[in-house]
Image 1 (cartoon, rainbow, N blue to C red):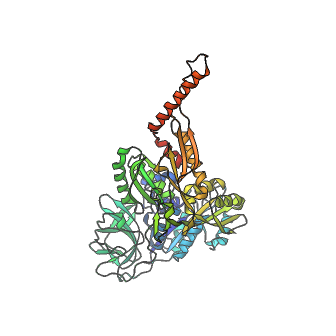
Image 2: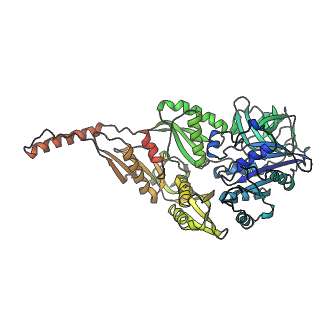
Image 3: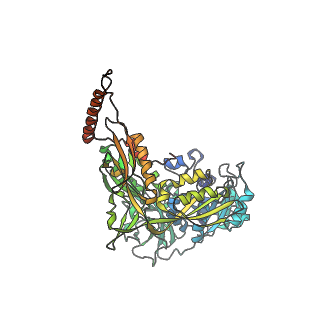
Length: 598
């Protein structure tokens, strides 16, 4: 066990985590050079294109150190985005140490701090690594100062690397062996392991990624998941080296996988504890919680006959993504679809993109909303996330909405514009502090509903890309919520309804009406597009009709002839309006959901 090291790489988005993983894999010759490709641990096309890690991976790196001993280095890769913080925390709970990666030109950012605190909570040994030292804008002295002042780590232990150029990779491997402690645990104690991830294989069922804390596991053992008491028989255990390598057994300190004929990923919950049925451990691993969605949106197929394909696509995607939840939904305007819950906006985008690519679907998504709590007059509490389920306002005593604590790190020259952005979004400024002479951390409490709309895009534009943002949910607070309906020719279009704060209602309704006016084609009659709260109309736009020039045949003569013809036309238009149907094109629904910056 003294020759095993379990570690993770944590960093802010785009600080070079996947590139460093690639170099470590190349250096330890796990993959032949001819089989190697960049971002080798990122298996999805979306991950490669966007340069982000969505699904965490694990790999065992054999390394012979300068002291001539051979070590097993278990790298547990983690997603970088704030939506997947829970998965990062479970991966860190499986490690003894972490490499904290910092960009030599960008310095310490919001998620660098958030991930450091996560690692410290799990009592991990941390090695700071300054990456991208080959860049012309790299300022190593400034970053070392930030490591000392902002992070409270020793800058002298920081390892200088350029993962892209392959500089300093051997020093990183030696640092892992030298500074990180080996795992502890009794191989003869009752078996206890932590699940940190899983994925679905169509031939073998769910493949569970876990870290053994004590005891041993081998094929034919009967295991129990402690959260749901499900019992399975182990078919295969092994370690990861890009491909799965079966082993006779795994014992305390090792990281590996298990196949046990598990039909669905949702049975294997991230953070759950595995033990043996015949000889169970006394307590489960701390920190387990079920992943709860925070953003909700309805997904509909563009063509009504695409419902079956959408149902099959979601079912298959759910096999690989246990955090996605969905239920059947229906809309008068868009037909049958599904109401889905997501971990955050990035998760929503990833699911949409995977459905469109992997299952060749054309989709419409309704405006993302959050979950509200409503206390009714009779004292009961109602939780809703769908505008269609909004109850009669006279029966509601008050409404509560989720709030987040946002940590925003920016150069101080953007303080004014970020302050304005957050206060416009009903933010409460709790604190700010200088991390260095020109970098500032601002703490705001913001309603989650304002953040899911277009906050991140706006923050990036007002800070010219230098702003970094991290958040955590804190509580529910009272709010003044209203339901804004969109009426087209007096008919309510349920798919365009939104739940918004009363102060935002007029602005949001005006925007929706303007976008719809530009998208809805002109008819032979006038089309009124209105935004309403209950019976009160708060905004209106009109699509003007096509007009035939009925007076063209009148050459001179009395004005009454012209007036008579115009009156006749007016009556015809009125009659047409009563029976005419307005067809709303799919592009109109999409335009309302897009933000102004799109």
